[in-house]
Length: 148
Length: 225
Image (tube, rainbow over all chains, first blue to last red):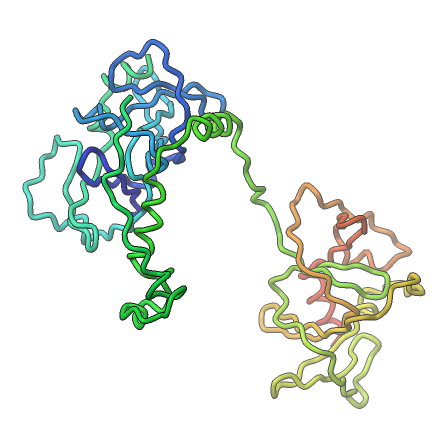
């Protein structure tokens, strides 16, 4: 599995590249009536207004700083109300990809919390990387709130 | 939004002192060969991204991201373009194995036809040489003034284990042809060359005829019988 690496707060995260539509720079955002604090704003992604969730704020940490390495990860999400939408996830240090082998996916000696939005993996040269589960990070209620 | 300054400090610029752009005394070079491969250099490059993105940069990217994505056409075929007299022809690049300097063609006693020219010794192997103008039955026209036979070459082509060599007057390069820029060549009973030339396209103001590689190899096989 190819994973995109990025940072939220102090933790290193990985996201399965097959979940990603595109990675965009941290563009200038439009600030309308934000449905929640963790929505950084929205931008026109290929002509479609697309909300941006600041993963720093969503996970209760500080907002992502406007650095060149801070980027918008565009992912496709669906809820019963909004069957096919693209939303942007703002994360820090989006500069690397890594290939995670099936063996690495299954050698975690820590207790796996089936409900947690992240699973810790140990990758050579990277230390601990949290594998992000989008469906648990962004449940339907959150999607409906952001897209509504 | 608050701007948090980068917590990373740029490392020493070692590549200019002990690296490839310095005196190359770095002990890591023995293993890494070049600074480009070294994690220290790669990490330093990433530090360049720990700068604040200017408002201008973010505005420009907002405009770029708002536009429809520019995509490369996917239905393309790579063609090698070459010249025979005044004719500019194209053949699928993947059938070309080598482009060589011209070398002598040795006639085969009692077996020579107009199409089969003879044998050419290439790296210890004998290859059959053929005349592409004869096979295609191209009308030979006097060369346009100013056009000289400047860089004659021999092309080695192969498909499914069958190898042939043919002389060309000049190799002109490669071209990526998209399916929408190719036009069908009208078949003309009076022009036998249209058997092999299936499509044509315009390149730099010239009409290029594409030779169908399947038909070409089938035609070559027939020429031996």
